[in-house]
Amino acid sequence: MSFKLHMNEFNELFSNTQKKTEKNIPLQKSIPTKLGVGHAKVQFINDMVFTEQYLEFSNDVELSSIEHHNDLAQYAIMFVVEGESSFQVNNQNKEYQLQKNSLILCSANDRQTYKINIKKNRLQQYSFNFDQDTLLKHLIEFDDPQLIKQVHNSQQFDFFRQIKLSPTHHYLIDKMIKNPYNGSLKNIYFESCANELMITLLRDLSTKKVYELILSDEDKVRLHKAKKILLQDLQNPPTIEVLAKKVALNQDKLKKGFKLLFNTTIFNTLTQERMKIAYESLKRNDLSITEIGHKTGYINVSNFISVFKKQFGKTPGQMRKERSFYHF
Image 1: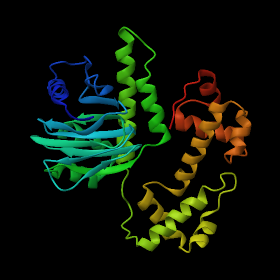
Image 2: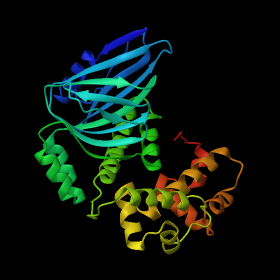
Image 3: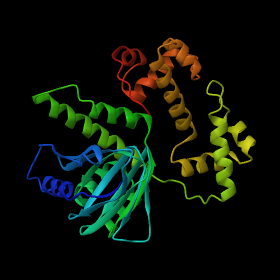
C-alpha cells in the first residue's frame, strides 16, 4: 500500500506553539493507525520550540511522501536518531539528505513547502527551533563570526553546518526522553535536560573553522586511511609522527586536514572511539572497570574514569549501578 501523509495538523500545532499561544504545554498528534504508529509533538521551552517526530510505519506501507508547509521563518538545530530521509524545498531540484546520527543547523523561510521522502520504515528525529534574533543571541557566546554572518545574511533555506551526533549527544538525548518524573517535576526535568542538550549541540556546531586548507581527493583518501589506522589498536595508537609517515602526509597537513575533513581533532576522534567501546563494554557487565580502562588504552584507571565522567557526566561505576544506558 502506498500513502501520502499530510502534516497539516502538525503544522498547525507548530505554528500555535511558536506563537506562544500554548506556552509550556506539550501538544501531540498521532499518525493514522492504517500507516503504523507514531506521533508529532511540539513544546515551547523558554525562547525556543522543541519538536519530536517518531514515525514507525507498517511493513506493508510504502509512504510516497510527507508534505510539510512552513508558515513561519525559523532556524533549527535538527538531529536524527533513527532512520533516513531526504527532502526538497518548494519543488527545487536539489535534494537534502538527513541520515541517522546527523546533526544539522539550518534555516527555513516562511511560505515554504517541503516534500519529505522516508527511506526506511522508522524515523526518529528532533529539533530546536528559534527565530533569527534568538539564535544570533545564543551564537554570540561561541565566538564564531563566520557562522554568525551566515545566519544573519540567510535569505532562503540553507544548511549552515552538518556534523555527526557524538556519544555525549546521544546520552543527553536519552536523558531528556527517558524522563523519570511525573506531576510537577516532569516538565521541570524535561526543560532542564533540553536546555543542556541545546547548549551542547550549539557549542559543537559552532566550532570555529580555523583552517583555510584545500584538500585534494588524494589527500582525503590518505586522511580516511589515517583515521582507520588510528582506530585499529586503541591500546597502542600511533603517534602523530608515525601516523603521518604511514599515510605519506606531513604532520601539519595531517592535523589540519583531519580537523577540516572530520570536523574534529585526531585526539578527540581517538577519545570518542575509546569512550564508545568503553560504554558498550560497561553494558555487557563481563569486565571490571579497570579491565575496561586497560582495554581502551588507559593504563591508569583514574585517568579512564576522569575522561569517562567528562564525556557522559557520570563515572563508569555510577552508570553501571544505575544501568542508565542507551543504544548508539
